[in-house]
Amino acid sequence: MADNTPKGAERAKNKRGIWGWINPYHYNLERWAYAFQRITGVAVLAYVLGHLGDTSFFVGGPTGSGPSPSSWDFIGTIFENSFGHLILVLVVLVLVFHGVNGIRLILAEFGFILKKPSKIEYPYKAKGLGSGQKYLIWIGIAAGVAAAVWAFLVLFEGMG
Image (cartoon, rainbow, N blue to C red):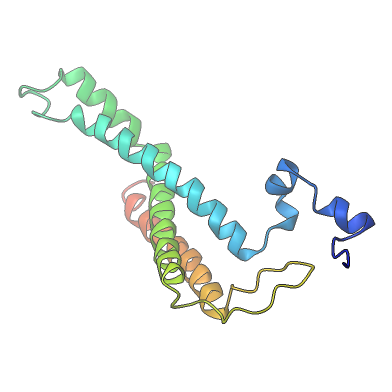
């Protein structure tokens, strides 16, 4: 029986453990997109939870049955400035990238944009990332940046 395990440095290269997972120099485009999909997912969740808390202050208006006018003004001062607008621009960037990349992942999950499977050979390289997926990743990045630029122009129009 032939021993097909890699020898020497190749074997050590495969035993990076957690350091291999967080080492950014070994990431290809698909792994970066996957990592950012998870990061942006957590960011979207944090934004939604924060937004729910934020909007709960506005129920009833500043003089209605809602919170006191001071809490209404406090929430307004947090987001109606340059820093708050930059946060909203980042939220737009994150939401658009997460959405487009999510569509790419759905299409890949259903097999619409995957390459034909091939024989697995050492060294193991990702062969499933076809040009369609690469284009969709770049489209997601470009759409996110374009939406962030648009949001920046809209939010900072009156400031200056």
